Each structure stands twice: as C-alpha cells, then as structure tokens.
Image (tube, rainbow, N blue to C red):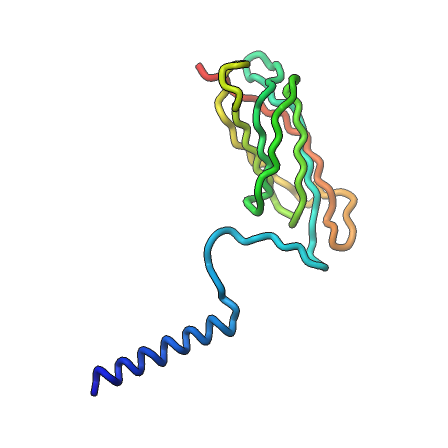
Length: 151
C-alpha cells in the first residue's frame, strides 16, 4: 500500500512538472541563443578594417585569416588579408558592447609564421552613428593588428 501511494505521488509530481514546462514553453536548454530579428527589435551594423602587420618589421602580412564575431551571438564573418595586409570585415545584428576578432596565420611558412591573436574591441554608446528608431546605428572601427613572428 505504501509503495503504491509513493508511486502515485511520484506520477502526480512528474505530471505537474511536465505541465509546468509545457505551459511555460520550455523546449530545450542547450547551445547559444539563436538570433531572430523581429519588428521592433533593435539592430546595428558593424565594420572593422585595418592592416595586419609584423610586429618586428611593421610591414603588412598577406594570408592572415580574420574572423569577426559579435559578442558570441553568431557565426563569424571571415576574410583573408590582401597582399598589403589590409582587411575589412562587416556584420550586423543585435547591438553589442564588444566585438571579437581572431587573427590566424593560415598560409604556413609562405610569408613567415606568426602567432595567432585574439582581440576584444569595446563598443561604447558613442560609437553608434546614424541611428534612428530600431536601427541603433553603424559602428566603424579602424584596428591595426600586430602579430608576433614565431621564433
């Protein structure tokens, strides 16, 4: 009798928990949130450009892969530096307080070996320009990156 009562209580509590999660809309709790833009949701545009340089010679480095991510919200924008080491990355979406740039030497020893570098670029309210209503504005940053050669 006691075992049957415990079993009924367990089933009742399980049913209540399932009802709670079903009514409140909990479907899954895994991975980063997906970015879904909706009418009335603020958004912004971001552009980061500059030159990737050798920290010892100060010369531009070609063949460096750069990835720009908006504060871990989405997949990165990727580009490879040109022959002068110049780059320009663009992305847009929800406004963020910082951007992440990863610089990675992907061409091997062709133009020298360089140590990978991660940068965090802080975004302040004053950095947003030309915004109105839901469009918070455009952020345009010039960031020159210096990479250390592998010794």
